Amino acid sequence: MHICFISSEYPIWKSGGVGSFLQTFSRAMVNRGHTISIVGIGDQSKEIQLNDKGVNIYRLPLSKLPAAKFISNTRHINAKIKQLHKENKIDIVESAEMGLVFKSKIKAIKYCIRLHGGHHFFSESENRNVHWWQGFKEKLSFKKADGFIAVSEYVKSHTAKYLSYNSKPIEIINYPINTDLFSPDQSITVDGNNIAFAGTICEKKGIRQLIEAMEVLRQQYSDLHLHVYGREWFYKDGKSYTEMLKTKYATIIKACVTFYGVIPFNDLPKKYAEAAVCVFPSHMETQGLVAPEAMAMKKPVVFSELGPGPETIENYKTGLLCNPHNVEDIVEKVSWFLNNTDKIEAIGENARAFVLQKFNLQAILDKNISFYNRL
Image (cartoon, rainbow, N blue to C red; front, side, top):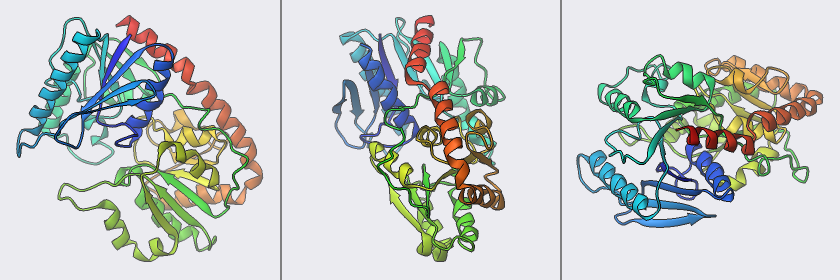
């Protein structure tokens, strides 16, 4: 099959959970003999073509129009998909929730939406109203889809509160985890004072509450240090969320928090391996990759009890779940691991076994291919 993804995320130019999924999934599909194209908007005025281990990536020109950039970018994507289809017939075009709005459908192609977490989905956890224009675009995009893939039971059911699947096929298929890349590494020494966080530096990832928790934890564990890996996030006025944190929590950040920014995806396992505890107190996720990645490395993981948290971790068996809005609960769960190091090995064994079963790359490829064929 020839599958074309509409996405501006991919680790070799822009990081993020969707990009990490696309790289793992696309490389594996290419190894199975399928053709993968990824079409997205770049950051330059000309098109750039890249190849990542057989995955064909097309970064299209960024619109310079002061207004209506969305329409201009959509036109570029439509034209590229039409060209690629003419050169090598496309079987499936896949996008995130809003990705099909205003896209021109080609009769020979089936269109799929993978639920990575859209505007409607996150409205409740971000405590905001659904914007009429964003909501309209998402509804229109859903109407154009021939099928849907949900990355967790939670994202399927929660999205259905707001949007209709229009009686089209929908299947729950988890994100795959590269358990060869994310595997235990006994050659790396664990730093007992290292707390690791990975993810976009924004409010919904729970990084603010984690920093507040560090202030409490340091009262008992004076040498603890929080290592933060992830891309920057900006408010609509262009101000940096990270800079807000550094201003508001200047004392504790100066004492025990380091922001590393984006690091290469292949370097992430080493950062997990060095940590005593990996903490991801997200306010909401569709599924999230960081928790099962660290679990695959047999690391002690504290994840959010909200959303798909209970689908990912069984409390005190494969990791710990916390209330991400409750700083005291984050402190309690991190402290439990620090005080019960004798239980970490058994929890790690259980965690990796669970990931190997639930997020198995080859099994998930089979499920995706079966669903694409069904469409």
